[in-house]
Length: 194
Length: 229
Image (cartoon, rainbow over all chains, first blue to last red):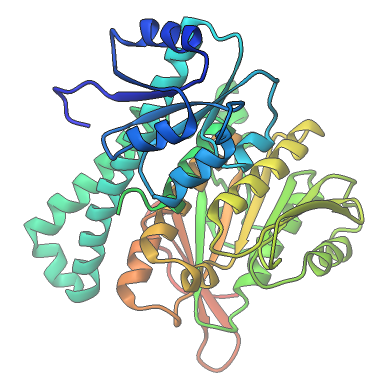
């Protein structure tokens, strides 16, 4: 996700009116792509897509099947399930990052998409943080304490690590609730930042 | 002054388990790594810290990669006879072939298919914390035994991130966490990386002439000296 391009949201929804409504709501802030069914959704899906809104009940491939194909392809996108029935915690166990139950309001949709983008940003910050930590650990493992005390590089690195650690917990609010926690862990398991 | 007293009451006092001043006021949300060679009593120390809190009414969560959940529950029942219903949760990561939730002797048990299934472990922890919270326990202690086993299932980068994310979750819950690692089973760089995911470190080693000794780093003030335990 670069600064100039808006994030990409892919809507997979078989009812054209519903899909069009979501698009109207989102297109001011995001690049919106639309697919009418699961197969088309998988075709339109590539590494540029940040968030997928996936209707659960569709003719042809079901939302659950589409999800498992997405995970198999190890794309870094976040997937929100859109469902007509009130879901419970098991939805997260199924592998979705968030869920929305119909009817959806505009504000709700915006909140969900921006929260999922924040998760992705958190992941990439965590990745940057790890890279610094690894560098620091390499110095610590290879140099003596006296050498470390004299090293400006080491001092700067330590300061940077401390700052990033703060940043991770502050800027994005850290891990605020269970959904964030699970979605972030799922990101690690999906290996999307490799 | 009233405020200071209040803050002190919220702190976790681990010094009755391990006699260091640096452990007498551990801030809620802290995660501590217990590091040492094999057979130096790291797991026992972690369980002692949990049992001590359980006697005071703290919620207790054990994430284990090596013990049977039933044994963990029996062990805690023996250590803490006053342990109440739904005060203990165990996430057992050795169940091959699927995840499952059940109740064992009044404790909540969640089974996860493998120590490498981080999402599954996270869901187990979430459900356990939710259960403890619903039964009115808004503080508690979590132990993860052991990171060394997790490191054989997944790489150090993933384990580091997992520890960081779990620490954030514990912070939000005002819990403390203790995590064990076998310092002899990994290279120096791996240990240094994993250490960075924690607020503090308790090191344990065999003392000269028998017995064990320990020191505390990173929680309050300078690293302590080695002290026989």
